[in-house]
Image (cartoon, rainbow, N blue to C red; front, side, top):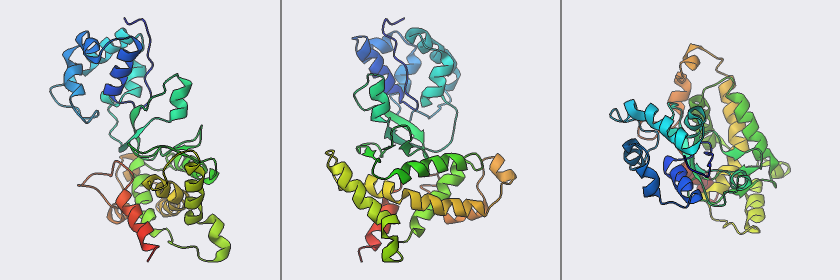
Length: 276
C-alpha cells in the first residue's frame, strides 16, 4: 500500500487518478502501473474510459480490488467515482471538476472528469463547469443559472437523463433571440450573457468563449424543456430509459448517439441569428 492516500474525484478519468497517486507519493506513473495488474496499462491507452472491451471486462473486478488495496480505499468508492469501472451508460460530457471543490482537497491542478451531461453547474460553489479545455465561469452575478441546475436535478426524479438532454437540446433552438419588449431585457439571456462576460473578465477569463452563451441561455432553455417534458406524462418507456417518440424526433443526435458535450454549433447558430 502507498503511504499517501489519494481519494478519487467523482467522474475522474483513470489516467488523472493514477497520475495524482504517483505525484502524491513521489513516483512516476510507470512505477505505479508496474505494481498494478496489466489491465491498467491497457486501459490507460484507451481514450474512452467507459469503453468496456470484451477482453478486459472479465479482469475489471480483480483490477478494482487491487487498486483499492494499493490506495487504501474501498472498491465501492472507487467504482462509484471512476467511470473506468462503472457500468452506467447514461450520456456524459468531458469537463474538469469544480476547481473550488478540488481546492478544498488540496488539489490545485485541473482534474479531468466525465460528468452526467445534465450536470452543468457546481451548485455548492456556483460555478459553470465549461466543456473540457475552457475555464470555469463564476455564476455569482447570475444566480438564476444555479437555480436552473437545481430545477434540472428535480426533473430527473421524473424523467431519464436522456429525455432531459434531448428536451434541453431542442429548447436551445427555440429560445427567443431577442427580448419581446424593453421591459423584459433584464430577464433575457442576452442581458445575462453581458453580465457574465463583464463579471468573469474582471477575474481574467476571456470573453470570447462558447461557455458564456451556454451558461447564459441555460435557464431559458431549461424552462422550455420543462414545459415540453410536462406535456408527456410518465409512461413505461421512461422506466426502460427509452425516449418518447416526440422527443426522439425533435432533438438532434450526433452520429446516432446522444451528444456528449454542450452542442457549441447549435448555440453559436442561435447567437449568430440574433446579429442579423
